[in-house]
Image 1 (cartoon, rainbow, N blue to C red):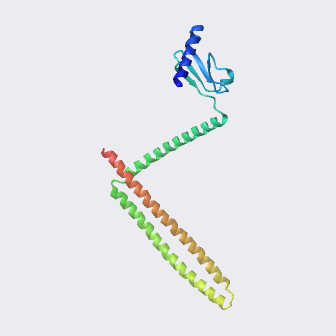
Image 2: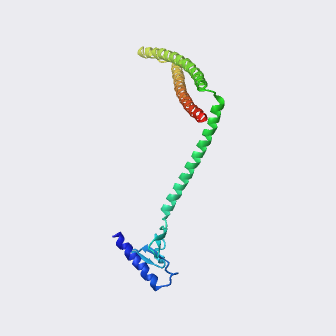
Image 3: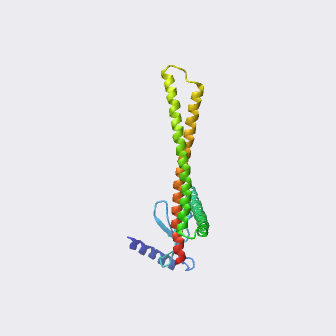
Length: 214
């Protein structure tokens, strides 16, 4: 079917070329009309000027394709895609710059992988010491809170009113305990983040040293 259509098109081109001057019909325009039928001529009719059309030379070879005009939605979507691509390129450039700065600092700070490990261990020891003190404080607060609540339960069983000071002590202890527990949780996260950072630094240091060696 395609070969038949091509033959018909070539026949049309050759036939019209013999009837009119060569400079006029050195190439023809082809478009699809509203009924889906492919038509060809010297120029694209105005009603189809916004649709896709092709320029075909006298040998039947397509030399130019004019895409159809985009709709407003399509133009807006292309604009969004372009802006997203530009933003991505900018982010990649910033990342590369930051990585280059980090690499220079890493190589200037540490002479060997062992230096990085020692630095990591010193910071972990400091965090662990802080965590140990915090855990001791938490244990003490829990013990005091348990004692105060036990006294409050005893008074309740005896039908005696709970002194205002006792309730204030319980509230204060609960608040202190919550604060210390939150602090301990944040330190645990800090510890893990530190380990992850140094692991990444060690891996990057190996890469950089490997690149230098090559």
